[in-house]
Length: 402
Image (cartoon, rainbow, N blue to C red; front, side):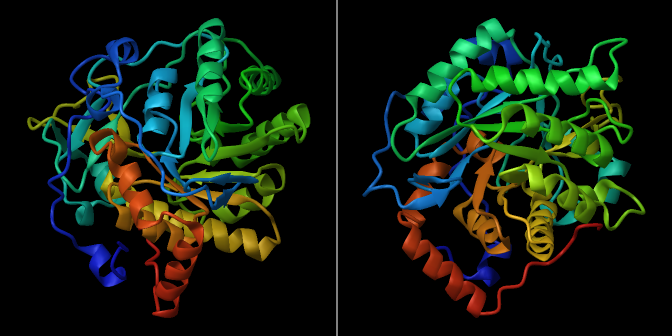
């Protein structure tokens, strides 16, 4: 069972296999946190991998290099369900050093747009939303990176980390939090302190979320390259080499008039990290059918997170790989964005991703982890097939600034 060549990957029939989402968009974040996960993730079953782990990633041998990125796995119950249902890599949702409330409902809505019609210009103009989820998935979300207090999330994250078996990996995602009147140095120190808190749970891989609005003159931390370098360097100086350390970034095509911004980011951040994850969501003006803001007047821009952002994510992965090699750096790349079918995974691997993750796709299609593993049960067959596709002339279109 191998995904077809590139020509068949671009256009495919609507996938009828969407099922009950493991995160329920019809109830609040708090209710999902307390009551979830739902659907297949709540059935108590465990996926049995065929054979021994063979895929290499960040110094570990795993059952595969597909997982669920930071966001949907709200707590240990979600992480453990993901591990049990065929996702060898699971990222525990981003945590902070202080409690932080979620944005109110709605938090997730469908985008009424064909993925082929999405562009950065359309994101600025505005796109209508609905509650009709269909495949290929087009969606948007707005949560505000909520977090419980460390006294709550630390023992819970430890529970998730300890649950991982041979061939599985749990990553702890975190971010710094700025406080009123705090200096930038104090903000950087909060990133360092929160990294320490995550490491105390036993997590051997940690991920700094530089991809959501926090503090930085660009509005998203990673787009402020000076701030990003100071934060990442400070974290690495604090933690040393005792754990693997990565960062999550957004689409650098969002930086107008700065076509070399991503190369600069890679050159300055690359020496300090073990991996980069690209991308998070793309800021999008979201509307109700009557033209009013879909998430309320205080949230006119939300994060597009479905199939519509895949071309941008693929371009970012490809460019990160090119710049890494050009600059002689050594870090891995995780591709994220618009993965809701095994063929999407294939495209990210061809673009240069060492691992691939989904968020929206797995929420609405919890079986996706098993499906990817059935296509690629061992690393040797996957490597050979990807080499075959490349030899057949696979070329990834670059839509970085489109």
